[in-house]
Length: 439
Image 1 (cartoon, rainbow, N blue to C red):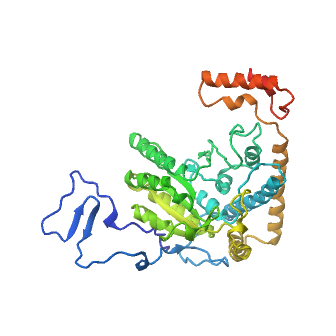
Image 2 (tube, one colour):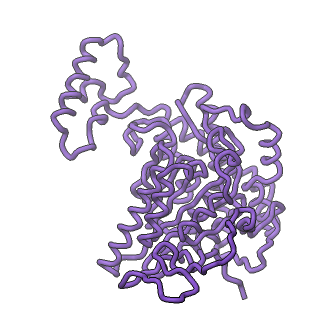
Image 3 (cartoon, rainbow, N blue to C red):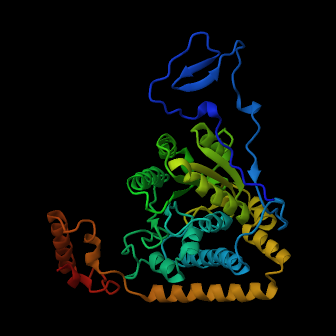
């Protein structure tokens, strides 16, 4: 019989007690009955609680770095074909990252961020969700988009900001979004999506309370450990905890926030300890193990929907093996040998492939075929997207309001007048319709 995956639950002493009346201190009680500490026992010894007295939270894994199953209770619940799909999604992202990083260096796109080393966190967690679940990403979750159905064309249209871009060419590269896939558009500021996720989860909870026939859904928010240093992180977790919101917070703790290593970001036990501090069910997983990530997310989703809803925090330990972005040189703040060691010793794609080899569902011939096919898909979409025109100039003024405001109409008129005044200064050949669209 399989042992259930357990996610540590905060101690009852820090859980909020909902009562019809306020708490009061009973005479001769041996513990505190105060709203801020519901059941804290009195002590007669002066002793501070120090972090060093607590054991670090364990890290759950299913498969070790050799592809060997170490959780004997693990039982795969998907087919071999579905396993291959997950692997190819991870492979696709890694290949696209290589192509687009080089494209930025060639000046063909202005910016790019890779997710090398973090593919298992994104693909594994997304595979445990339903398409109706609402997602808020940060900026390194290409694998989430791919797993949910984003195509090579969708990626490239956004990266090149052409006329087919669903964001209408308004965002910088890597700021994907998809209404059809229930993924909100990425925004640049760190942690801005976290309070939004808590609010959205609370809205889903109220929606179900008003109409129980609506299928249950959760909100999932992805972020890096650097974002957990922002105030929005704390506001979001506190709101989700106190309002019992069906939200899953997934932290990609990849070791570095741009140029700041985790050792310089905080002194506590990672990000997981903060979840417990806010009264949130929390688990830490091996982020290079897709099955550990998937199992934890499956269980977290079940828990988030229990008893009307509650938040869950997953901290996935992984490693960022590439630069933070194309604007960064990570070798200025970390040793090249460190990065190469992680690439060689514990890569999530290689680990999954080892497991697949052990299961007899993958081999070198299939690997070569998949890599060639996926790379061709990326390059084909790249070429097509790069050759498309930019969106009509008028689009920069549309869609914010149902009808353009007087200010927007004035700005559009001023732009047209500027283009007419300096016809030799502006090249509108890439823009569909040119200044004619500003009428």
